[in-house]
Length: 208
Image 1 (cartoon, rainbow, N blue to C red):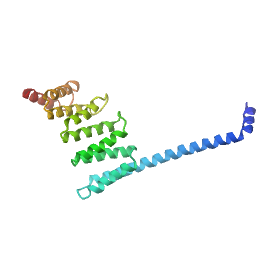
Image 2: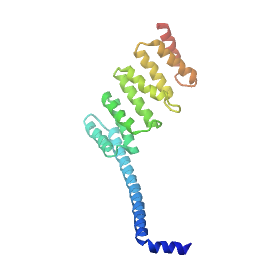
Image 3: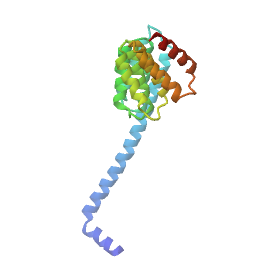
Image 4: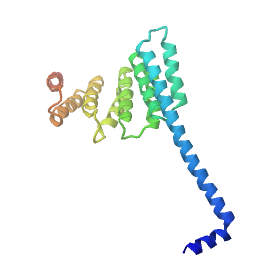
């Protein structure tokens, strides 16, 4: 067997060398790519942290610097985990300072890159929903809360169902609002808002 292998190598020296070179190049490329990804991820988290520090201490004068720090990080690393979290932070900041359309655009950008089963997808959807709610577009708000409630294991299901009830109130559809509030108390009897929701149910049922 060994003799056959040796004979094959002697007869196909060029082929063996070429294959060996290709294998070495492939290994080197894999190692380089892995190292590059680690560098990108580390840089992304550092940029995210620095931008977040600026945000915690920002005022109206420094806000443009803070915003640019976040946008720069997102531009450099749009698909890394650090870059995605930075995008979520920026959306949350826009929401906090009541720039709801910018928040919507930022959350929408995040939704393009994250898996539908991830927590980031839920958080971005909720951010979109709250932003639309604050703009008075209750129908669009409902559609994004619905995305969260349709998932089996979301940590934000109760929050989304209650918010849907609130949106139905905004649409003057008290019947649908009461349905959502009742469903929450029936399916999630241990929820901390049970008493408040019961009061809401009584209030809205009386006003129908």
